[in-house]
View 1 (cartoon, rainbow, N blue to C red):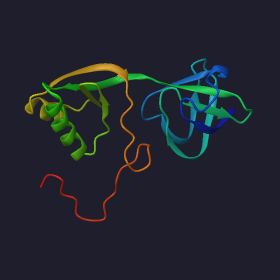
View 2: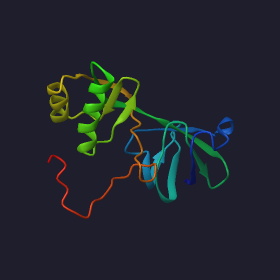
View 3: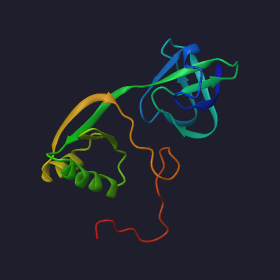
Length: 159
């Protein structure tokens, strides 16, 4: 089995020479070590020094020097739209207050489908719909990847 030993962000690796590609959902794109399968069916061991949050267009270098292109798989996401930018920002605040992975686009927020959060967003006046699309939430202010800010104190965000 071939080993993927290094990750490089989009634009930081020779994409034109990619020897193949992997289409991965959001959860699978945040790993350190895992058996993966290329789109052509070849087994690859992801064997990185630390977990990384891979994005669409990133590359994985194989131990033999070849590269694989990472593609974001389409998956169910909840799309949230609001009447104004201010209204959408207010909804984004509520999502962030709940530490939800959120993708921010022009006039739209995307999260994983969650009926409770969908009801909350509708209660705040948003329009929602479940679509199928690649999901690439914001990486966070503490390192650019899929990280959570861990608190050492009582954390009552709803107060």
